[in-house]
Length: 363
Image (cartoon, rainbow, N blue to C red):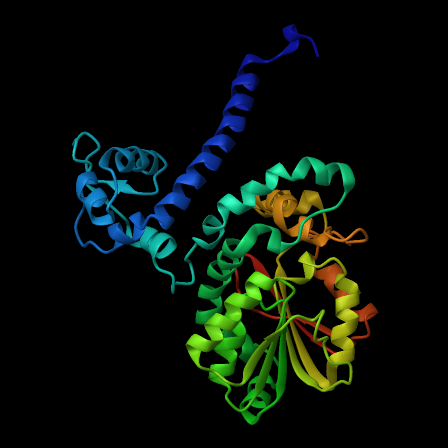
């Protein structure tokens, strides 16, 4: 296209679109700093606006740096300021901002992905080689902070809704777990869900499996802190899943799409599960086509990008990896794969979640 055919208004809009993405990336870095430096916690802990100087003092930080950070946050409409013309910059968090930024037990808490932002963006250094060779990188390539970031991303919602909302939606599972059964959590990460279930159902036994040594180390640390004895954490490469149909309940939370061999995992789950067992499959809410995802999911671009840097990279970390990626397991594909793996019943649960879909899968 020649220069004379360029629409100047469309050019301005394209430049705005591209640089708005850069603004988002830079502000995401500032959110990471606000979380890591305790700035959000300090703001949330005050019932009245806090001047930028006072905020710096509370956190033991240099005022000039905090002022520039706060200016970004006010401009981005994340932190509020009572009067931007006041040189003291009286800052505060709205009630909603406190939930997202500074309330780790609230289901809307959103700092998990920002916790691991340096590790996620650090993967960019490896991407040219991956695009050339096709080989990605597993989750341990993000280091211990990557595991903690995943933990902080998913545990708030699970701690609030897994036991009172999700489990009762499954046929007979609560009664089975109350009476005592065998359950496994595949891709257990830092172990939060398994430990919660073990505390809630002391008559049952739980085994968490993960291939991330960082996640397993964190899970064992949390298990000891919680002092629960009916849960253990294993690496399936060293202690494989049972294949004798003795497991009553299987959980997979947000991990099947990350696996290099998801169908083979489904076959392994079929072999381990009892004839009347239940598999709770939780995975990213996705649709069948790019067009549908773009039209109906305002976060589609974020999820496809995270897929390149994390999810699909993990799913391509073996030479023959399936590479499903973040939006690679819509309900239709999950159902098709589960039935092909030997299951006969597949039901989507009526559980509301902003990111995930929940399925009950039975032999």
